[in-house]
Length: 222
Image 1 (cartoon, rainbow, N blue to C red):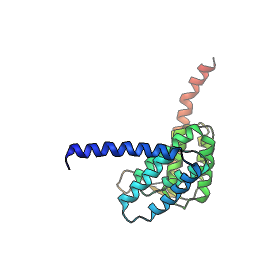
Image 2: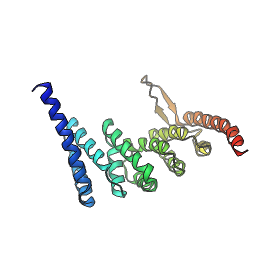
Image 3: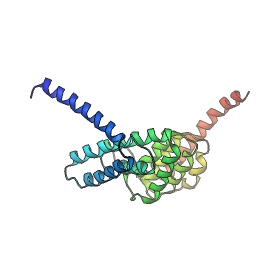
């Protein structure tokens, strides 16, 4: 097949996909979400990783057309995928939904804390999503991740707390300053650090940030 023919087929496929997504978006919400749930379960049984990734990514994109508790739960399930590409799409759709319907997503995250399997990717991803959204309720939710027993999840929550930059953050970290659990650093050299060390560094950063913002707030108050 020539390059020209391949390009034409790609454009046609893209157009068809857009049309099909529009049709599904206007179909019965309950029926579509039920079928998406079935499709995810089938995709999880797919032996070909590339095919599984393609199917799950497609479902995550389609879920961006909907809202509601079941949509949030399905997106979080996809965020728990082993495929980074799927997690990126699911995270983007979930974040977009959170900006419009934060309470809905927040309740879904609370459910995820009790229903998701331990050490799943989603539990380590969700604190970062909360930091990006930055709603007032995000601090409390990140605090719940800090209480998890999985060290990697706690480490993610600590980093998310720094990104959020809330001056109340150090209070949530106080109980972790002597935590001996170790996590792997991202350097790739096998280096490890304790949760206590991460908490201490995060506390210092948050206190410095609070000190920098204090004069600005004072001037603004005048």
